[in-house]
Image (cartoon, rainbow, N blue to C red; front, side):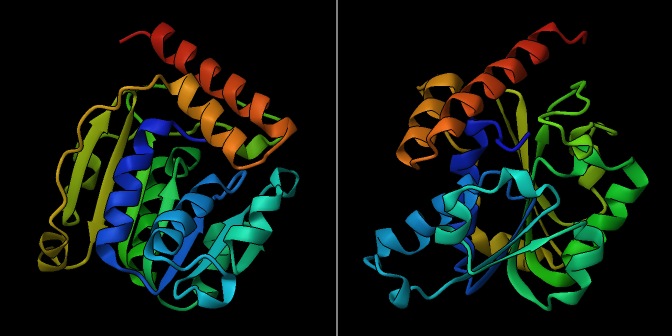
Length: 232
């Protein structure tokens, strides 16, 4: 989906802020909501509203150009179009890499290889994905939206990691060095009070996405419905 489960957002922003990044890569940016949220909490909340004041460089990768919204131009310093597995090795080093709802689109072994590439490129890697089986095929004409694997806590044991789950999604922060991960001081975040549909509506509307706002809300409601219907 070009949107993600909103319950992962507080964790992603908390981990991102704790890492104090100067260079961030957002893989699979979709509509650009995560990039916009990063700008708000890394820059605007620190008193840096104007672009010339920003201290963090945020780049993105997206394989499906029709997802483009005005947020791409506002939130990102650069957006690279194509397959992240091919583009990532050419981009250099980052302090933080986000892969929000990306790894489920790879077969498991390809996903593990992708995460190894991510950890080579960045000091910290934040991964999110649905909890449990979540069937999905082509969405919005994008065949890359098909889900090809299912991930859980045990899949990340080969790397130092911090793992939490919240309402149908999990968030894992990975690092090469356990000491680096411990210094972030990550914790389990409290449950959010707003419903997923309300959060999606408010965020999309505030971001000025226009026709994408209703699509984002419908997509998240469909996601929630499929998760409830999925067998254990």
